[in-house]
Image (cartoon, rainbow, N blue to C red; front, side):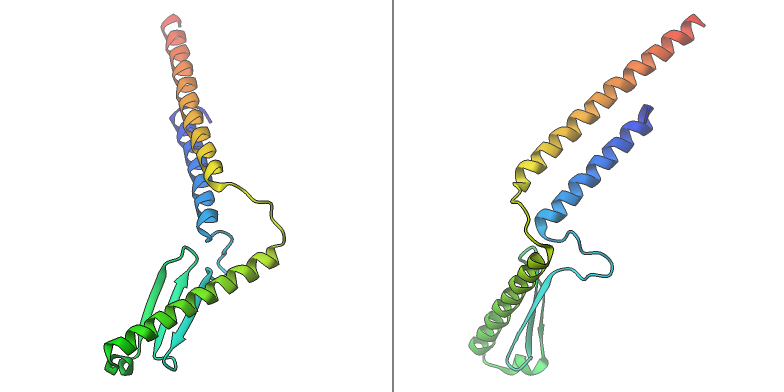
Length: 146
């Protein structure tokens, strides 16, 4: 890991570590190709209104059957609220089930961990740059003597 390549390799590895930590913090880590991301689905109006919520607390999609569009706006709004709340409840249940399957985990302050990792990355890149400059200066000096 010397020279520009070594510096970029270190930066790449630390960046990947930070991205992994971010995915853990957002609830999307540990979902491999064979395991779908954590979502919750809810519906209302006999399935005519459906909502899907994701682990980061956002709505992934809302689906409205064309028949639902014929409802009065107040009734449709009430069904949307019901479907979204059902999706969030389902998401919470799935997350709790996965947490139970994972077993007990000691609490981790991921914000503090992310900040420490950011500092390590910045310090490591700075030190690698200084090391690279020192090696380059030594090589240049040897070249002038030789």
